[in-house]
Length: 256
Image (cartoon, rainbow, N blue to C red; front, top):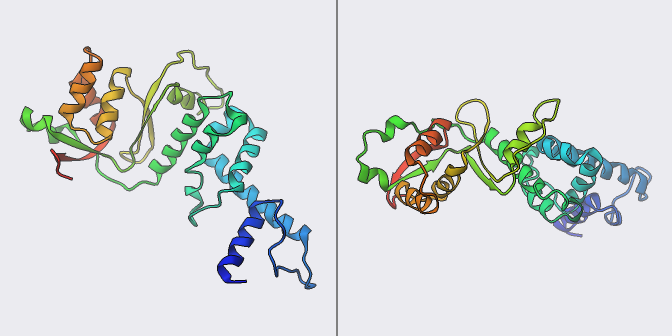
């Protein structure tokens, strides 16, 4: 058997308990040893499920450790790590949860997991100085309108029909505080300095922030948001996002 095929067979046998031992794999006595390989297989699954539990701790709290282990094992069965850095494992876990039938009773769970995945990515993202209001202040209004703000390398924006930021915050301490205001939230995850911050944005700023993160200009984002909400305050929203460190660079018009 070719080396690549041998590797594939070995990986499949590790992740799938119903797979036979890889051809040619024997113990010290020269015979196949199902029991020894089962121990190795279990260690792999335990390692992967623990890695997911560490990255998605709030999700684990929401469903309980037993349910989470079962869900994590189902995920790991068909998804081996794509990087030697185990911290990257689980990027697709939120989407898997969205399609995991036993978790459908918790429709907010996939977005909570997406927030946790964004937190990990922010923690390991490149450092960059956040864009400040002082950089924009000298610009003429016509230049400001065509300005495109580049998100900070650590920044991620999550718009959810559920209060995922509040749910995440409620589970950061030992005692869980119930979330009373159950409404959609736009959450900014960013690490402008040393610590990763999770911010629930004002309701009126959600669309504006989303349009900026999608690459829209300040003018276009403001106009679209005002069309949806005539009470939107462009100045307050822009200052708020800059204060939180959401952006790191600027571009004019269509300049990449």
